[in-house]
Length: 337
Image 1: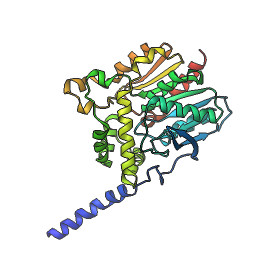
Image 2: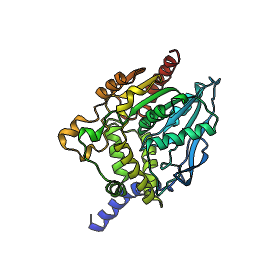
Image 3: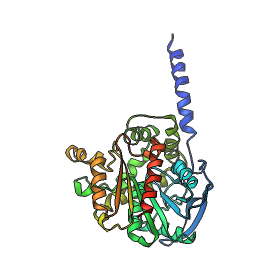
Image 4: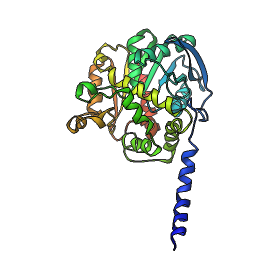
């Protein structure tokens, strides 16, 4: 076989992959990505800027139980990632609100914004007030768990129950010895984001090395904004929020949480932001979720811990039936307290 034929053969093998990646190019507010339910907009003024917060508002599909569940997404996730959880909760009688936080996904990407968990909690509080929701079950995953904890501390009167699903922030990485990185440094790193990098990260931390085709959608969602025309502002907001979660720990305030709390912890999770820039001895101590989950259950006064020893960072995606049964059972138990 001559060289030209070999090159043509290799090109034909690579073509489907290139086309697949190209198809994931979305706008800076995830324009082009299909959400599982209609997306509504909450217009707000924050830090002297007019901003738009996207959210899904899904009514019960079974007999209403009179409760509202608010789903808070993680840093590498969107409201859409809660697709199966929304369905399960609405079938259980909940009204479900799933917002995209400012700086993420379908919501505004402000160039100059002081991101803080207190600010995002206040934005979410304003959304719920606008919708007339006085009390809710607050459910947070990953970074959304840090936000859910901050929301509960800032607006305790609005929290009926708290659920933390593999939240990050169960330890203080800076205190543990992880070096600080500037927003500019993290921005340069974000500009180098690739499809393969996102997939490999999720494979390692979210799914314990076991990839399923249905996970591809969430890689495409995450990568699509980097592949589209808004790459720079997306990368900038991601860098700003990476600095936010590193410098604004909530772990020291867990004893102040008074809401009945359900901890859902995948034991294979080893997520630890910044561990890649930490000394090896420090990195090895971080992200030990079995230990972190138990410490957190002891720190939060009214907490119940449910462990999934064989699951990773995203148990709601990796094992939805097991996760959602534990979620519904846990919510039912909390409501009887």
